[in-house]
Length: 227
Image (cartoon, rainbow, N blue to C red; front, top):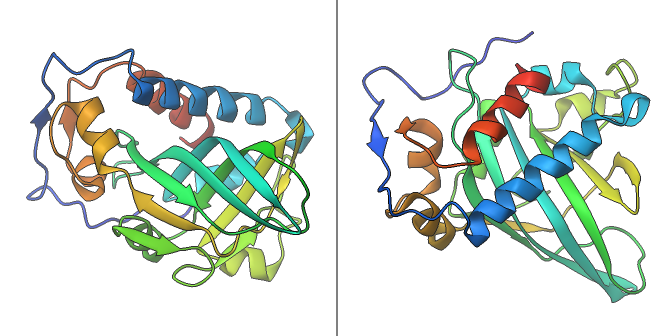
């Protein structure tokens, strides 16, 4: 397993307590619960799951559940998701909220709901993801991720990519290329969920104490499959 190194240092760590008034039954909590369910179901697929060796080496993992694809020939996407990063000790951060818009997944007619998983392979990919916004394929290289119990079938192009992408629609799970999509910080969702104005970098790299449900379940799931 590769060593995980981040800009997080002991001097940078700041404990942030969230107000008790933060709502645990909010839209953001529902988004987080949907991401947990999507990743659990994907990893329960056995031979069709994301290889645990891929997740074990991940620097960050993002899940965008229920992404909507729509269009005729040239399609678009929109969705809301979450992202967490692994710190130097191997623990996973609390999730920051994000949005995904634009782009296309090949030839498509009509609309379709898809769960997307992004596995970020290196620090450069993480630094790109925590910008205010960036475009997949332009600001960060993306490749369809390998599936199965191991990653031996991965090509050199896949292993060189900063981000591996996966999708699941109508029960079918596979690696997929989603170049052209734009990912943005969802500062409003961060504020509503944590009860204070926090940007993505603060949430991912500064320790947050007393995080509301279902954050512990999300972090436990990441520890289980990408520990």
